[in-house]
Image (cartoon, rainbow over all chains, first blue to last red; front, side, top):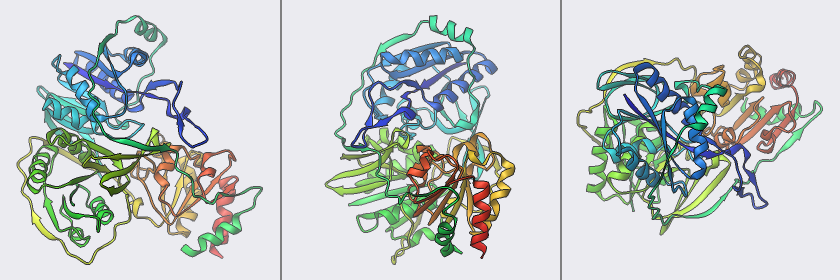
Length: 243
Length: 293
């Protein structure tokens, strides 16, 4: 079966520092594969191992995204395309660009992470399904392929629901679906030599959304900190009201 | 101004209606919920057996027919699927995950970015939004809504199995007092040692992402954070939680935050009202004793 996996590259958010105005300093941050993209790659590779076929990775990013594609290769992705031209977070534009790439081949299943760890928007699966006019199921924790259908188990609050859908379909995965593999040195070396298809994207950013501010929220907390065994009386007093 | 609110979780619909009330006229589409009619919407539409296909079809027609100015979709799995589908169908770009809205001709919205590290405030003409759960506390209104039942088309998706999960206790989003545990607790067995505090305060227990997802000391519905539940208790007591930004983003609505952690440099001490630097296994029993007096 032909499997596509959509991979997102993000900056390492743990390394974002703030300037004096509490604004994030975004220069020279290291890039990495987004957490849930790793689960998506793992899910795609596991499907290939179980049912046979080929996994194609797609990244909408910049020249710098090839490092993340190599990581995907090392995990078992067979071939990959990096679409250049990414400028900013805009789910609808990103979906349009990726859908255009997906239309070039016929995929049985398109896998991606459910929500990315920067904005948690979680719109991509629905947007792409809408562009391609195929089915969509999000937050999957298990995928079983039948002939032309898939049984997909979706996690919700109080129950796990297994739904049957026709293929092709867009399926986003939750972190619980698997434990992403750590590639061996040999696989990393091999991945480095593999060809990456690089194409120019054609994103149409026509948004009139204006960013008024982007900064860490001021903490209004009292920050009264006790040390050396002190503070228990004070905190007990504060908590007495709930008793 | 006329708005449509959609949520497959009635609790979220109640919050969004409360938040928007007085600023615009509101209709809501939700799964059936007796209480929902008491929150001040003009009309509530109840559906059954909704999937992404039959609901998106219904909502697209309904939004066009009723000429809603603004559409608010609660951010759940289904809500996000629908927002994605409807964006293209209706050519309405969606502003995701908002927790603040002000209408001054244009819409001023706020959402978390960079994994919760920052809040981005934006001005736009966008008309569709996904709304982060917990935007406010739901409060009933004087007015009762008109109720209409909607019959959806048959879905092309088929449910083939439903497995209920064991979930203990109540929804932590409704809790007044929460005792929350982090990696600093050391092991699942040690939960027993903090239970006297939970019981004395009639609190609910919750946990950080590693505790609920990686170590599974608590079930997943107890996870607090940007990717888990956003809570708004009167008191949030963090035990052995370092306070990664992802977690802090889930507790910002708490009235008072108390932290106990042996690491003085833990980021939680930058985001708490009261903190004790110390071993939680010594501090918690002493605290319980004082509270019992």
